[in-house]
Amino acid sequence: MKKPHEKLWENCLDFIKDNVSIQSYKTWFEPITPLKLKDKTLTIQVPSQFFYEWLEEHYIVLLKKTIKKQLGQEGKLEYSIVMENSANNKKPYTVKFPTSNRNVVKNQPLSMPIDVDKKVIKNPFIVPGLKKITVDSRLNPNYSFENFIEGDFNRLARSAGFAVAKKPGGTAFNPLLLYGGVGLGKTHLAHSIGIEIKKNNPSKTVLYVSSEKFTHQFIEAVRNNNQNDFIHFYQLMDVLIIDDVQFFAGKEKTQDVFFHIFNHLHQSGKQLILTSDKAPVELQGMEQRLLSRFKWGLSADLQSPDLESRIAILNKKMYNEGIELPKDVIEYIAYSITANIRELEGALISIIAQASLNKKAVTLDLTKQMIDKFVKNTAREVSIDYIQKVVCDYFDLSVEVMKSKTRKREIVQARQISMYFAKQLTKSSLANIGAHCGGKDHATVLHAFKTVNNLIETDKRFKGYVSDIEKRIVIQ
Image 1 (spheres, rainbow, N blue to C red):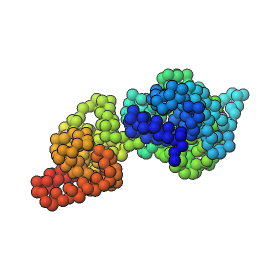
Image 2 (cartoon, rainbow, N blue to C red):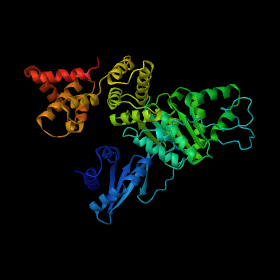
Image 3 (cartoon, rainbow, N blue to C red):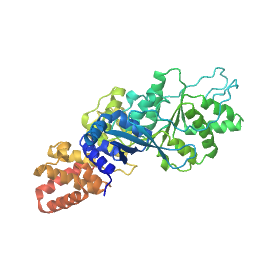
Image 4 (tube, rainbow, N blue to C red):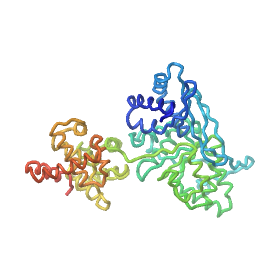
């Protein structure tokens, strides 16, 4: 039997579910655990300080309305926030906050002090022979927020990054660790944050450096016996951006020196921004004390862009380059290349270059030929999105109508054919195919596959439809 606080929160979730999107509900409300109900005050546990702040900023009106609805005007909500005890690295403990309280006190790490009496601090980026020591931020001006396309696949990371850019060192997102696969925009976003900080705070010292460069500089410092200069230089940064921290794995001395630099900057209220190809829990060969610090702030992932985002990225690239291409060409590229943004932009550049060299117009046929060559060395798979587009174009339907719950014969047939080809031509699970086709389950996909197979054998006209669609889907 459910306890009163569990039943109450269940009722709250029923109301909340009707007022937010499914994705928002799964992201921000499913992870919440109800702890107790006392004197018309419901206590809920949230996973992190960032989680708490996000709820307070984006859903406080909805939460207040929900609590008042369930508990009356005297109803109150308290948060229990899971925070890691950095002092002894024990299991997480909880700290309670009422909704009106935003003050958070965290245990601060010990750090290596700066030698304030040292007159000259060597800049590892300085060119030998130059007398004046200045810090070049090493930021790429092309990687600005203006050129960064936002979508569902990166919205959390982008929002957190923009918050850091507005108030470096003054948010709960310290460090901010951006992680995701190759070519998904981690480096771009890290540069964007740095550029925005410099624009708003010209006096702040911002530095972007790759983990490989950092390691090489440290090795040189050890060789020249000036490790202290190296450490002191990095401890003077207001904002330190380290790209690809996964390459610190296995390098014990580099991790040790970065640990002390990290501690000092974090204790001094300076901002740290890190990127990685994996989440902290998946990083191998890293010291636990360093991984522990990576988890202090926010770890935000960047996923593969959805179709609309891929089209937006291509359109933005064309705008920046001052070129125009036919809509069907852009759509074909977006449907065909789904892995990452780098490949997407690379394919666009290759197609434009090829057309320019051969003095040909960029047509759909040329694009198909180039895409085939561009991806021939990879295990290429037709995407479910592309299959759905081809099927819908063939039957003159919109993808939205095809995914709807309507039971009209021609729409159901188009939906079943989409499922049929998705099962045949992709490696997606039945559940994933069903989710792409209007939230159907795996049994529906199996039924569709069998239905299409049966119709192919018994209906010549239907068989012709399927044959024509297959020719359009499969690139020759």
